[in-house]
Image (cartoon, rainbow, N blue to C red; front, top):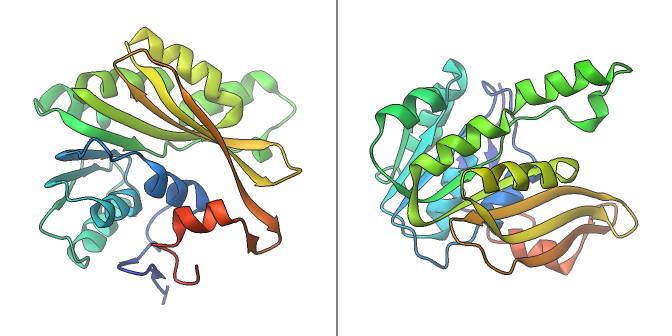
Length: 237
């Protein structure tokens, strides 16, 4: 029997999901800007539903919709939504992003996505094959095309991606009229390399707010920044 992952205000069952709860998702869910008071939120590739649940806790958006194509993950996401305190505001669609973007006429004030990608640790000696696999795992241009269709005019799109892909992602986003508004680079420790980038986009070109977040000072000793960002969620923070 797999135990659910418990947060302060909700629990997440994840035994049926390939994408387990990890630091990336929790960082994005806690970090994504909500100062514009979104009425409607879309979570692309929801997995367990963790991002939607975190946003439901953080803001009073009336419509929080998630999209999940994998059968088992979809069923688990629905279960997690139903068992949460915000089940009246959460809904999951079982569909691909292509069909959803084509069929849905609604626009969303906030779109969030923790896209699947092969981590750098999986690299083989065949760089061409690695690149193909990487792009299979996360077709950036397809994601961005759909976001540009589904995002409201004043809406925001927040994503977490490998730092090594950030510049490429920003360049592709500009082709569909999306521009970075806020960037936070994530380092595991003070001396480690930047591993991830949290980026928020809008349809407006502007000066970008850039910051850095370090997770630990030493093993399991978390920085004040990281604690402040995640303490509303993690039980032991």
